[in-house]
View 1: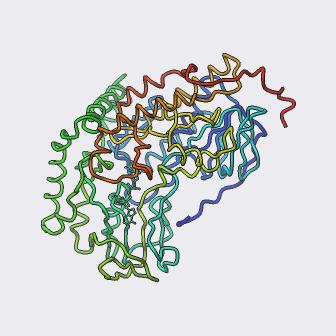
View 2: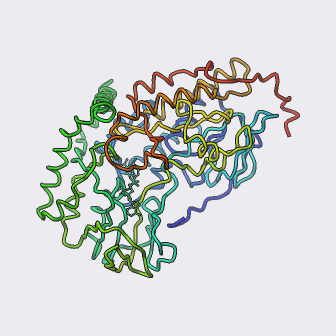
View 3: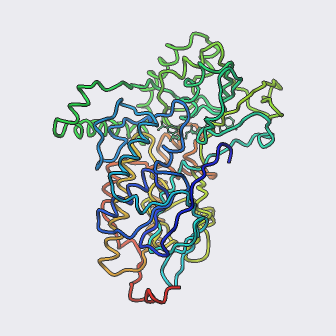
Length: 509
Ligand code: N01
């Protein structure tokens, strides 16, 4: 991996647990807290990083902040009256997660610096056998809360491997590398890059920004909360929840723009064009940053300082494709070579082809990666996969959002998982696995709905789509609908086996 390595102490693991959770970000933390609240204390959460936080722990680049208001981008069961602004910065979100973890009383079952290397389903014992960097663990239930945005994706640019200048990915920021007075290049103009570029433009000597596709960027309506507001949120009963609900409803109201009536987006796109015209006087640069696809097709970005940063004298927006890299230059297709001291790769994540899928081997000995390459990345209700008993995803296929808070979706998925485990215990079940027919029907419906969305018709190529052009990342309905559909575990859609058919625990090797 490009960027500094994280080193953590290996930790002792129990031999067997009821539930093993992979990942200690928002999803893993919520899973642990809600399992404990349901009465299940026999779980373990492993994470290869040094502490909780997941993507908010890893993305420490300058300017990192959330583009969903914190009132909604936080747990419903741990509201935080102390947010200092409407869209919180990464350090504040990371502090919030640390605090939630500390107050939850579950972190004694968290092990950091532990990487999952492989997981195989043992049909005879009805257990997951998981190999980790700290030794083996067996678990009745395996929960992947590893996240879709955890594995950096590098651009396929010839010469990157042997590039002589410093190189790191936006999610593996090298804080030891000073940028002051240097010639710096940023590849990418997505959600990460539009936060990085304004944050560093003032300190570098020269900044080259390599853009493949001009994004839609709306104004960011962000502001600091006044002391009085924070105090009111703490003291006035129900005020913060009311505010949260209003933010939620405002976001839900935008769903038709994405899924049914993309023409509504033209109203919003006027505000994006005004955002450009306010900051950029040069007509050539204005033309370069003008998007050529329907608003919403890729993630809609928000920033007040992206366009002003591009208009700076020391910043150059390069739209010519990168041809190759030599020892310390970036060469574009028009044969222009630009020297750089530091290259920042802000090219996103392996979102649709999640590497963890290659580590998980199901009932037939096939890895999830192999299964998904045959039938496409899909699951049932974004949570479970046919052929992989007792495996649950939090943030699984088609659970991502383009308009609202992932934390809301995470809580829906965690409720489904916790109810599944509750029902398994109540009915004395050893295994549950979604029926192939249930999974197929779920996905046929999803893909039918996808056809009308802006993600399919908007004329762009986004990370939401897999190699076959299927949208396997996003949820094409309201988040409220998702919550209703996942509010309880629907055992009828599953093939189950009884605990009585499993060998006695004593005989489990
Ligand atoms: O990654 P991206 P990201 N040559 O995949 C370009 C979340 N997030 O890290 O558009 C040149 O969006 C690529 O170009 P193109 C959020 O969900 C949230 O920025 O594919 N360019 C694109 O411009 C987001 O969607 C926040 O043509 C190349 C960029 O790299 C997700 O993370 C903040 C290239 C990649 O953009 C990912 O965002 C940050 C090449 N060879 C991230 N290859 C919040 O605020 C790729 N690109 C909550």
